[in-house]
Amino acid sequence: MKKNYLIIAGLLLSTFTQAQIGDVLNSIIKEKTGVDLTKTKPTNSSSTNTTTTSNSNINLGNLTQTEISSGLKQALNIGVTEGVKKLGVTDGFYKNDLVKILMPEKLRKIDTTLRSLGMGSLADQGIKLLNRAAEDAVTEATPIFANAITSMTITDAKNILLGNNTAATNYLQTKTQSQLFTAFQPKVKASLGKVGADTVWKNLISKYNLLTGQAVTTDLNEYVTTETINGVFKMVAEKETGIRNNSALRTTSLLEKVFGAVKK
Image (cartoon, rainbow, N blue to C red; front, top):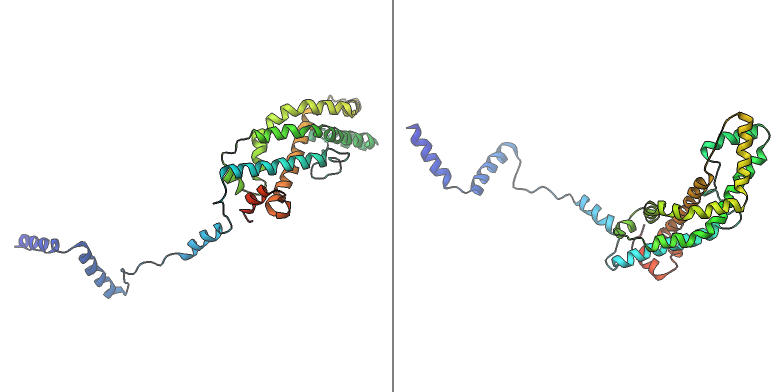
């Protein structure tokens, strides 16, 4: 008899649709708990609005990939040209706190020792001549940097444009630092000799070694080359930040079109 009841119950259930069964269950739950499962959960409108808001100031629909790439390269070229012009004069490095070349870290004990012995003027002269060498060498940098920018392939130009204030400069530095170093090092070496920095530093280190009994050596060419290149990149980054945030610095229609599409 029990088996027959089960068969009959199965037949009755098979005549209901899934929706009807759901209605019956919801009716029971609503009666017992007051919760109506048929009402949909409200849409989280705040998250939708956030997404819309975050993109409301970005309109790249009228820009081609070529325009974005060209605009970024133009900004970098302007930054290099203007940066080199500012750095390639007397005190361009030496009196610019953003790029001033200081005593190499591993030689700062020399600076301290010489000053303690009353030879501060010799230490000051050594630092000044490092900056003079950079000021002389950097005038040769424009074509090297310009070539690096021109040959650069920006496959992710849109991401760079939408990146932080120095995204293009950082990208260029990452991609070209080693090539720039190789091309620029001979020019720095010539400048070190031209301004007499190599002679002064040889004398400075010799005095220190004589006084302390040590045998300190350093590759000034490598150090000044790296610091000079970094100095140019700092100036380029400063210019890029300005172009991104100040429409008055977008001096061409392309710069205005590209960077004007992203309002910070």
